[in-house]
Image (cartoon, rainbow, N blue to C red; front, top):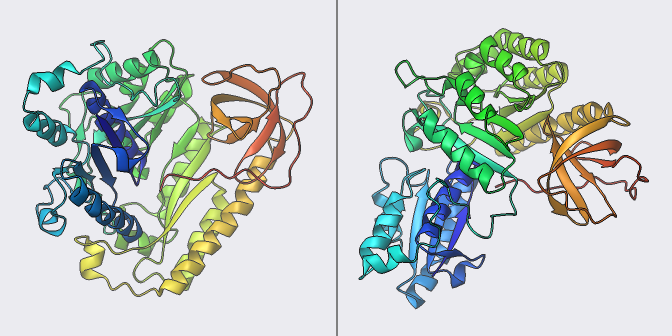
Length: 456
């Protein structure tokens, strides 16, 4: 029996898909990269932007002929397209879908498969993995090939930013017990993981819903004690919850990387107010100063939305001025897309023309490319430590503690996957860098950066 999982969207969806794969592996299913050959096909969807929803809908419709040819093929729809309320109307729109799964909930599919099996014990007996200490079983095609894993620590969101559909689709905040998270990380390390990224829509709010419970700094301390784990990251943060205590904890724990993702969304106070972000630009500038004071070698990532309803040219220019002044290492930029059910879609006209949105997006990207090229150029000739993830086009690929992508060559034939390598940077670009191992000659030189595609 084979399964295929198609995943779109954020790191949380990647982690959710891994959890579904783990549960299917426990039932004896094996992954196939060809959805046509799969007995079970899972679509894990994103609706943060219209383009992501359109992509999922297109793929879902393409499965209908396969279902008609093979009625026994199971098609499951998961993620934000379904939402926490179950998306019952989707059954009418897509009658070839067998199972609807809310975000982060593999249970409906597993229950369906068990109920469908005429001999339930036969399906249970196909479970090939009997190590009960492994709370999350990596699919066989990933075991021994992955170095980095995503671990959700808090689901949902209690904030209601006017542009965001996540609270309606993923529900209110729900923190996982710390013991459960630690056990999962320990399980992943036993299977070869060397770095984990703790995930939450607002990860800094971990534990806020647990009376007297732990907070994110406590969780970082607990995970830091796991033998064999080399690096810890966390995302995404909200400016209002990035406390000095959290920053001091990051500074004190050697395994926690000096990389902070703290979205800004816009550089103008009036736009931020309409977004209901609940902070000002003065607050954000102050936060960046506090981060850099406590973590001098830090890299900082932000998110920007261009073309939000009512955003004037002057307000957009303030966003550009903010990026130019703060010089952050990463800027994830997106054009505003009205999402059904959000406050902005209900009450604010989408009055920035599409062509202007594209122009603003390109302006941010062009500026950020220049900024990052300058930041990375400072590392030329310096030695950095990278955690090697895989081999890519003949080079080893890894990331620095500050999340910089680095490539290097090694003619010795040594297997570097999962190892920490110290390399001297010999070339820098805005998207990646190249280096060489101590005592080796510089690798072949090229004028163009190596570009790695991101998750959709």
